[in-house]
Image 1 (cartoon, rainbow, N blue to C red):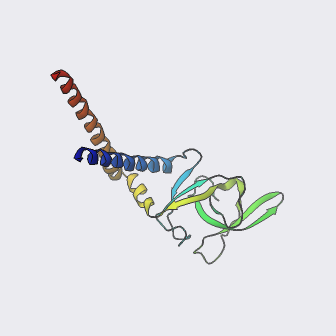
Image 2: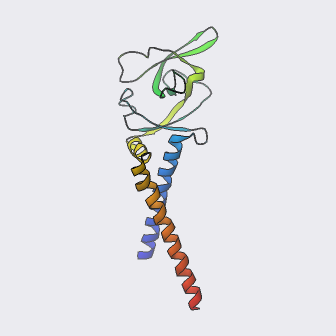
Image 3: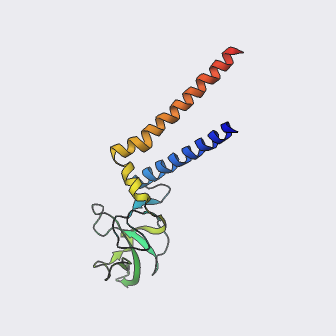
Length: 169
C-alpha cells in the first residue's frame, strides 16, 4: 500500500515537472504551432490577468470579439494581446482595430493580418509568474536541474537495487 502511494506520488511529481518543462520551452519557442506567452500588463483584465500564461495559435479567419496576439513594431517589440473591436478593408488589405478590455480607448495603430501571431485559445492565471521565474538561473536550478538530478538519482538507485537482487540469486 505504502509503495503504491509512493509510486503515484512520483508519477504526479514527474507530470508536474514535465508541465513546467513544456511551459518553459513553449514560452521560448513555438511548440506545434502554439505560442505560450506571459501576460505582462493589466490591459486585458479581468479576462486575462497580469501574470497569466496565454496560449495562442494562428487561425484561418479573425473576427470581431477574438482575442489576438500581435506585433505592431516588428520582432523587436514585445507582442500585445488585445481584443478585435472592428475589422476594415483598406486597399484590399484587412486591418484590425484592437483594444484592451481594461483600456478606455482603442489602440492607436491598426493591426495588419501579417502582424497577427495567433488567436488566444486559453489562459492559465498566475502561471506566468512561475514560467518567468523558471527563466532565471535560480528558478531554472530549483525547478529543472534539482528535480532532474533527483529523478536521475532515483533511477540510478533502482538500477543498483535490481543489480544487487540479481547478484543474490
